[in-house]
Image 1: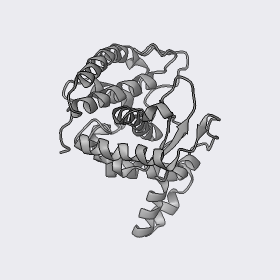
Image 2: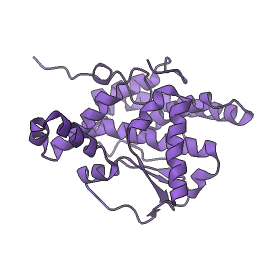
Image 3: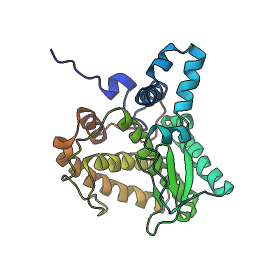
Length: 263
């Protein structure tokens, strides 16, 4: 009899940044354990005393150590160190996001390194190859609302990358690509999931911000973009793993809270 793999909902209470019931502590412990296992340190983790085990898990979630657990490729040449002021502003945006939407309090539990980016036409960027790192162009700091959006966009990707460290969300079929509602082409099924996850979170952000003509227009734009994502998700199902389909189905549901408290 084939064993049935547990779902994200059963294991962690849901999807990161989406569900009020998401258990971030259990999730981050699983991510850290996975990193240590893949580094050949599972026996060390099992044999460690409780205090030492906690230190090992904490170390595995350090952004610099996270790079070492991956492939340690060099950063692109258009990445640079942010000034202390800009780095402080970016970190402060995480704190403000956690205050705006209570279920995002988990943002305070994962360290993120912010770096600068000089890339024409790109305001923010992140990559599966660089876990717990976010790259921001100077344009991201144009206003506090812009900074909140860009940081939330990229940190959403980072939390979904953590899921992918443990389980792939789509099958590696490079010949299957999609065009996002923004017009960005050559995106694989996992990147469609990522865009949908980001959009759901941005909708929650703009619902939580003071309502002005600008925020109301942004919500209309996001609704239109999400409708495009919903259509795309229907075409990606055949190319997703069981975990990917679970994420897609959750993002397609209509009961995602806009900005309610965590359970």
